[in-house]
Image (cartoon, rainbow, N blue to C red; front, side, top):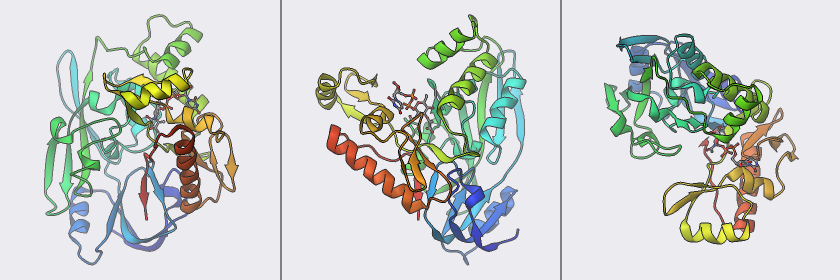
Length: 338
Ligand code: EPU
């Protein structure tokens, strides 16, 4: 293991922010991970996977540990189901493509999401009507406190909308080393109900979509709406869609009947933050090198040399405008690291 000092993280975060880590190390085995977590010379340690859901500030006085554990293993299978363990450092999208090559169903709606497999459970990634939790069996993680390798069940992970145990009570306590999924081998559950997918399949005259068709449709939709981090730095949705209670929703709906919304329960409604931000006039706007994406207002972008502070200042401006126009609080989905 080589520990680098004053290491640029530009290539390790999809926002492309040129932040400097005081120290940086890459681990490729669980033993290396346990060793470095046990090393008392570095009091502050920050884990980094695909770097797709973080906003870094300029200089971070910490040891960054890049988790680069690789491998996929078919643990068991019967006629209908395959149980597969995927190591944390496997790129999410490449892994989804691998499941489709094997005709394993379950992750196709989550094609082309940036990031690595090991960090996906932290915010229970989701897209087009499906969330990671729908295929999740368990995960293995190294407990930071005593470096023991432990298994967490689906119940223990307490998944919610862009939320899990790892963002709450379990925050900063574990490093996920692998995720075990359950995939369908036949009778795949086709989730084509999401409006954009239906439209895309219709455009292509596909009546009975396969899981590969769904994946292709999702890829086409994402490519048309969301910027490719390799071309334009971003970390996907910068904000979460706000969930409001019935009273606030009724008032909002009366005033803006044209606004899209999703009913979460009898008491709660989710309002697309992208719509709110667009109504405030931010869509496609650029402030120096920080900007709001032209096709999806939920995504903040780094045109080239934006600093973490530039992005944060823009986010603060957006939050304030949305609050003042709609009296609704929106909050970041990405993790701020400073
Ligand atoms: N909308 C606007 N203007 C915009 C963006 C969206 O009016 O600039 C409206 C759309 O017209 C639509 C509604 O808002 O009526 C919802 O838009 P969309 O289907 O694009 O989804 P979203 O709610 O904006 C969420 C996820 C995305 C995920 C899509 C599809 C969150 C925070 N984001 O976005 O996830 O891909 O649904 O399932 O829940 C991510 O987390 O990085 C991400 C991209």
